[in-house]
Length: 172
Image 1 (cartoon, helix red, strand yellow):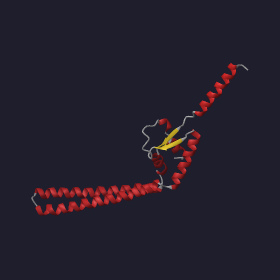
Image 2 (cartoon, rainbow, N blue to C red; image 1 turned 135 degrees about the vertical axis):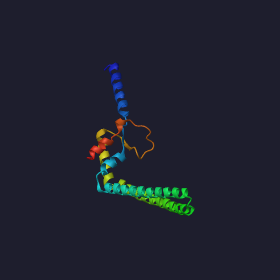
Image 3 (cartoon, helix red, strand yellow; image 1 turned 90 degrees about the horizontal axis):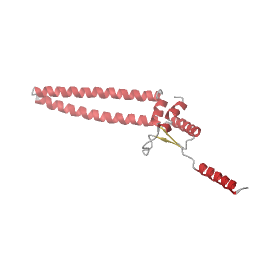
């Protein structure tokens, strides 16, 4: 064999070894909040959550209107120089304001607790992780990152976003 042939073969072997050693890592990202919303959109627990949220907002709107009415009365009493009524109304306004604040805080905590319990559903996450695993293996992804759970993702190409594929694979 000629030296030229042996050198060529060695170069080809070396080049293919370098090419094989330099595998490109493929990343994907998924918007888990969009997947979550799609998964639970039509379920009873989400309808219950949305119903409670709407009822809470309706009650806050009603309480806020009562507070505005008291403030209007106070302005009328002040205009008519009815100091006793102004002082009495100020006390009612303070009491109503405190009640609205406490009510709002309590209801927000209740809604947040309910939302967290919905998001930590084991059945949802089991199905999500098995779907992500299948999509990653089929698509050749080395890693799929959540857009919500990592503050380190500063930029990503939309071409690596597999959210729609996950939603579709979950049958949503």
